[in-house]
Image 1 (tube, rainbow, N blue to C red):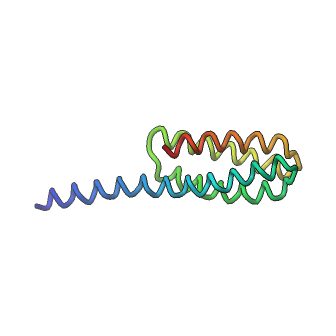
Image 2: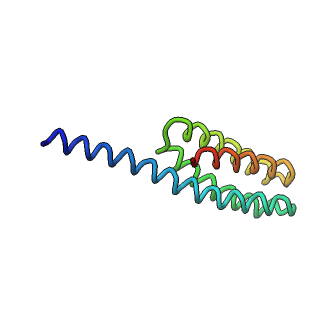
Image 3: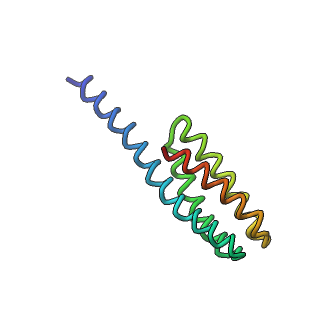
Length: 111
């Protein structure tokens, strides 16, 4: 009986980790899409705000994600870091392109 309980608990923990990754990826996606919208409008400071919020969620999602999802979320984190860096320099066009790459990775990692 103890073995069955241990297996059941382990399975539930693994399943919940995937759910947590999806929740964070969904939140990251909402913010990074806002970052893209503001970047296209040339609003670098607002792009940075949303990209930073997306980065927080993407990192948390990557911590609990596994396999291909983790690979994409990690790539999304790098793209978001680039978007933030360029956004802080006022390079809205480059920051927007990096944010768009993050959108693609986060979407791919949230399947």
